[in-house]
Length: 331
Ligand SMILES: *[C@@H]1O[C@H](CO)[C@@H](O)[C@H](O)[C@H]1NC(C)=O
Ligand SMILES: *[C@@H]1O[C@H](CO)[C@@H](O)[C@H](O)[C@H]1NC(C)=O
Ligand SMILES: *[C@@H]1O[C@H](CO)[C@@H](O)[C@H](O)[C@H]1NC(C)=O
Ligand SMILES: *[C@@H]1O[C@H](CO)[C@@H](O)[C@H](O)[C@H]1NC(C)=O
Ligand SMILES: *[C@@H]1O[C@H](CO)[C@@H](O)[C@H](O)[C@H]1NC(C)=O
Ligand SMILES: *[C@@H]1O[C@H](CO)[C@@H](O)[C@H](O)[C@H]1NC(C)=O
Ligand SMILES: *[C@@H]1O[C@H](CO)[C@@H](O)[C@H](O)[C@H]1NC(C)=O
Image (cartoon, rainbow, N blue to C red; front, top):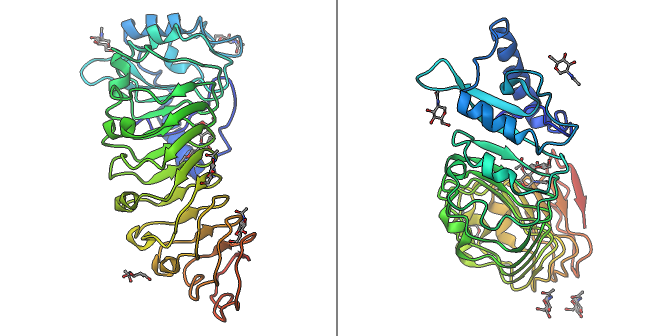
């Protein structure tokens, strides 16, 4: 539980995620099948926490005349293990124009919470609000995308169960080094569109599947340890300041489906070893100033290829446009 996307409280993005549509349709149908039975009343401690939280949620927010907070928009509940009460597992307060961090005093007591979406708000400083916070220890999904968070990426050690972390579109600065090593279950990390500097971080758990670091100031060459994250399916390093020879070991990522390297400053040639990543369907390396020729076999598996705006030369390999199922090629 805690995975299905429900209607958010303040902005509606219920239909913007086609991947989830079928899944959430099933979820809604199964809820509808159980309808008729009103939802279990919320655990009384949590009910008063929720009523306290409602003071922070703007006028577009919760209808507090509805007695069970589990029925408020953006709230997900599950039956608690041993009682006839339910507990809160999901809170989606995306786009609620919130900025007052004192709400964390209440939120932190919701120790059953698994997914928290506070994206598209105006939080700017969370320093201290997550220390000694019982809620953070159980959280699996945390979304702070599009806020005004600034300063260095702080201590995340309270979030030891986190699987999905989205801190994109903020103003974080500084380097990212060991801060990420404290989340052993991390599957998806998005730090895109910040002002981060230094080497591409590598301290993430080996379970990592999606890494999005686009639109910052990461520099130097890609550390070879990154290629030990062999579960990676998505790697987006676009629009950074990455240099060095990229003829690196992409073939060590046997599940890689999407590789976006656009808008960097690598030296040398397009990595030929990409042609033996059999899972790779999308490769973008436009605006990179790559030199040399297009390696043959590059479209053997890739269906969408963008190599435009580089310094490539030589002949176009005869097999480039050969493979069936090719969707887009720009060179
Ligand atoms: C309500 O839930 C909390 C956990 O958030 C738990 O400690 C408490 O015992 C529960 N109370 C009741 C009455 O079930
Ligand atoms: C809030 O809930 C009450 C009780 O279900 C309902 O009568 C009322 O129309 C709702 N208000 C809004 C603005 O949805
Ligand atoms: C976080 O929220 C933003 C904005 O609502 C959304 O676009 C993004 O997909 C969310 N991130 C994750 C990992 O679900
Ligand atoms: C950040 O990246 C994750 C992983 O790919 C993705 O699910 C999420 O939607 C992205 N967030 C935004 C705001 O695009
Ligand atoms: C980008 O890299 C170049 C060359 O390595 C360096 O001179 C420049 O300062 C870097 N820019 C930023 C914003 O890090
Ligand atoms: C893929 O290609 C690289 C270099 O072209 C080579 O070193 C590697 O052994 C190949 N891997 C497989 C699994 O074929
Ligand atoms: C691209 O490479 C050429 C030759 O190596 C170099 O002269 C030029 O400055 C580079 N352009 C950029 C934008 O780095």
